[in-house]
Image 1 (cartoon, rainbow, N blue to C red):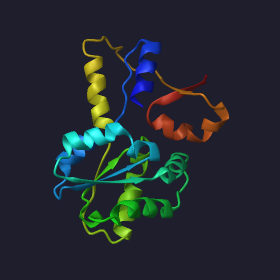
Image 2 (tube, rainbow, N blue to C red):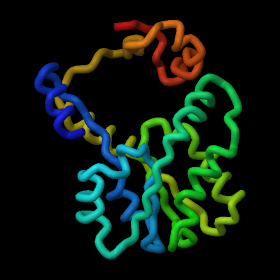
Image 3 (cartoon, rainbow, N blue to C red):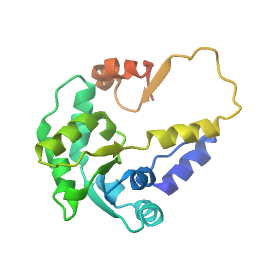
Image 4 (cartoon, rainbow, N blue to C red):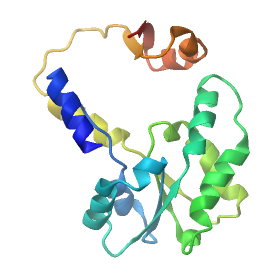
Length: 192
């Protein structure tokens, strides 16, 4: 929540970049004026999502669907496993089978895990008979722009240091994720 993020910023005393669903980019991308938001149960009901919709999607239709069942398949994919396609069909059906869902041409991936399974979600939409091509959007570009802004003028080392992945869980739990994390430059691991 916004309040929790303010507390984290105050305690750490360093810039913290929060994430919000990419409603503005989705509203700019949609050609039909109907777009979807896939997120966790908490995300799709947040007041800030209502504010983003009111500010950027006036005159449009944003259909929301809570799809927490996508987190486990996304993590399975990161471990190198093949996730069950039923979870992707269920999530997409939750959007596409709503009134006006057949007009969806853009879907906001409102959870940090969901971009990992974008290909599977696109296939699920086709499997469900959705005839429109769907563009998926997430907050990565907005986060990158914010980080560039916050670090403007900062001196950077000539070559990057090894990426550090920090977990509050048991270090054994992340062993299966190490190959996928290494692809993102996260090669060192620590537990708090």
